[in-house]
Length: 394
Ligand SMILES: Cc1cc2nc3c(=O)[nH]c(=O)nc-3n(C[C@H](O)[C@H](O)[C@H](O)COP(=O)(O)OP(=O)(O)OC[C@H]3O[C@@H](n4cnc5c(N)ncnc54)[C@H](O)[C@@H]3O)c2cc1C
Image (cartoon, rainbow, N blue to C red):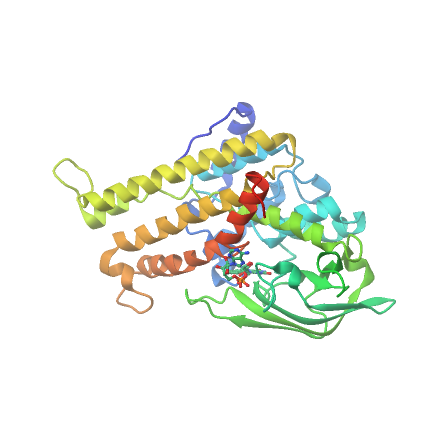
């Protein structure tokens, strides 16, 4: 567990600690939070998890820096970090993490009209409104600005036709924040940012099965979908700047908590065994475990330091692409080490012959492959770091 790397408000820290002691349901400690936070997962219906979500929503601590009127707690960035540090300290997690809280919410706070904020932010903050991200298309992934989903101004509404792909949680989402093409003559300045109600006639979401066995994302088809004019965020053809800002929020939130997973050492001691001096008996595995733990710790401290340095702004900093890659790498190596520690158990993908934790570890390892793809691929993040942080030519 990583202790705090910078000063905080100690009185507030004690208040958070006490609240968590009274309100965090112990059975959720150190669980694989992803099984709850994935909207497609049945585990999200679990009563204990729902109770935890309700308590955090009432407190406004799912989105602590948002104004109270939108479901937040009006706290500073430093106080928000104390909450997440104190949660990590006891193996708790933020149950409100979603596309809405991590991506759309902060974007609407900057670019939305007052009416859009009042309409959507409270539902995002208590999770009664679930969102999916309609950005990628079959011909537009890394080169996102090539997107072709067509949007025509029909006078009293917009008409949308086209296809999105890899849309996480689209089959469960109430709404989609979507990039559409409003001008074919200008690649970047021909894109607009729309909020689309997924119940609108003409929308079809078809789930895609992943290598891990889950159906995390979908293909989404739009056939003559009518979108009210008031659902446009920003101006027509100005959606690319908004999308870039949203992607920064996405990458920033993806780097959160990556280095704070529980230590694998006790598990390795049990499954692999220890030598006469009490060390993990496989020296090669031991070195790799320690290396990963040290990288995770260094990574977490770097995230904290950069966040503290950026606290004068809104918390999103230039190093977000580099951190996304570092955090993904640490988490991917950890997932692989866990499977290795489990030995034969780590080979199971389904069936009664394997313990549920072993099956979950295998699937988590397979799932970890996507950490370096979603939110922008590894290579593309390196390009961004080279250009924006290191000032190298494009
Ligand atoms: C689990 C998961 C969930 C996702 N959820 C969503 C979602 O909810 N909404 C959404 O819109 N999208 C989502 N995505 C899509 C994701 O954003 C894209 O997969 C990603 O941006 C890469 O695009 P692509 O798949 O089209 O690959 P491509 O862009 O075709 O890239 C293929 C390969 O080429 C490399 N490459 C491409 N361009 C360059 C370059 N200029 N320099 C060097 N290498 C390059 C890439 O790094 C990659 O290795 C999700 C993806 C995954 C895996």
